[in-house]
Length: 475
Image 1 (tube, rainbow, N blue to C red):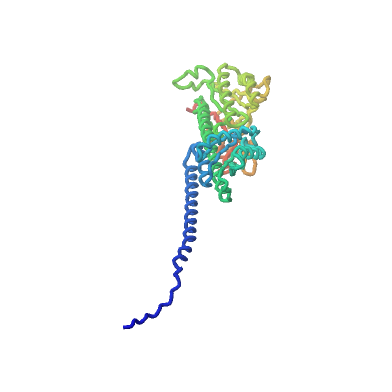
Image 2 (cartoon, rainbow, N blue to C red; image 1 turned 90 degrees about the horizontal axis):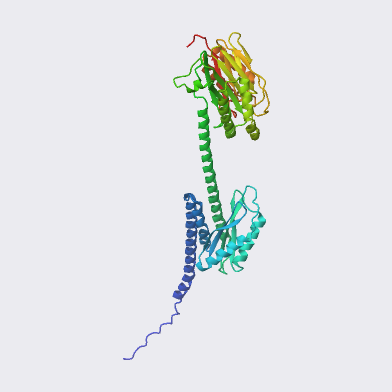
């Protein structure tokens, strides 16, 4: 049998699809890897910044937070290290914190940066007590760059607190291929801003603690001053009284007092003799707050000691003025004081005035008002000034008010003062319509508050004493 040759198959071209697919896959994988790496870098940066924000919210110690700053700044920028330098109030520059991945280089780097700071002369601080001049900051940048060397890639960001540069954050790399891209610069500035917030928060915390301590001291001062004022009005035969002191601040400069006129009254523990003489005083220290409160306390102690000597009201004011003159002259403050003594046996009020607002006396019989005043300068103004004595006999229904200028100087929203005329008008109405001294006192305070307006506060202290003569046979 003869073999029949099979038809020859045409030759097939080589299959290049596999090699082509391999060539196409390589760039895709590389691109995917690049995207993945960028995502990892982005997540790393976000995690680091999130951790820094958490530390800012959580750390109560500024030093602990500052420890993180160079580390975070170098991590988010892939740099070799970072240095935090702060400007002190005295104008000096201090290397606060340093982070360097190369432990061997770290020691030399610290010495170099500390040497750079010593090359910057201490300059006078700018307005506000902190910050350095732009020229000094530029000199610092040059010194740091010189000590790190020309091969080091350096970037510095300002730490601004209330628009004052309080420090610099330097980030550096020795990699010759390293470049300070716009993104890296923004990240360094972001870390610097977080540092500024931490510094400002710490300073605000310190100020808050100082304020809290001062507030507590003021509370103690106000409590002491309140205890020095009379807790209640004395029991005096034929007289009924009411009094109130309303301070503008927690510590005020107004003063009023009821002083027993003899040692026997002070020593009694079973009640005060209602037929004994009592001193009634009211005063006002020029100024407000703690200084005025201290002078008021000094005035109270000296007046109480002087009353026990048994002198007339004018002589008591004269002695008080001479004793207090030197202290008041040095403090540039003065005291107005109205001093009086009431004798229940004769129903007579003896008094003398040292330039205080004259008390107002309402005569029940004539339904008229007069001022009780004598000549005399302020306490502490003139060491040789003389004061005058006067007296008045009180009869049933006569009413007397002692007051400070907080009443007459009280102003409404239009700037109009309450003045003495309005006080006299309110006082006259109260004497005719109110049954007790306490009711008169409440009415006068209500009138002033209504005049000032709801929600407004009088910037000055207000003190008022109401003394009313009762019938001799009244209990």
